[in-house]
Amino acid sequence: ERQVPQAEDEGINYRFNSISFAGKEGWIVGKPAILLHTSDGGVSWERIPLSAKLPGAPLTIYALPGEPGQAEMVTDQGAIYATSNTGYNWTAAVQETVDATLNRTVSSGISGASYYEGFFSTVKRSETGEYVAVSSRGNFYMTWAPGQTYWFPHNRPTARRVQSMG
Image 1 (cartoon, rainbow, N blue to C red):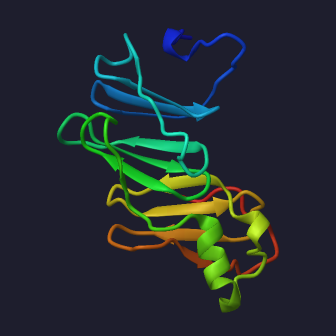
Image 2 (cartoon, helix red, strand yellow):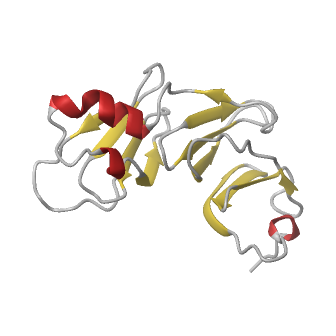
């Protein structure tokens, strides 16, 4: 067990959702919204400010190999952001949240895709940067690949709820 003093605020109990390392560089995201970064293997951590305008809560973070300071962060509302300078600037990779995508595509027959169900419970990233995400109720999933403007919703072939995909 390791204490992270930068995540200790009076009266706030943070829950870490995702931890990712590339070499000695690491990232943590959690709820309430918090982002932490280390470049020394977790000996010390720096708290990186997050915008109050961030759509949704940070759900996953991926430390990217290559140059230091690179990461991708995904929120529970499907926002994907990339940084190449240790979180000082972020670039949006998708143009709309899950809610907006579902409202735009609801006529396409995605069952269970109502306005109130547009949150992700799990998100996984492949080594090539493609994502798969499962809705919080497990009744549909979405995929995204680099270069796409929006998440792509998918129906499931059975009535069973999906909890996670990879």
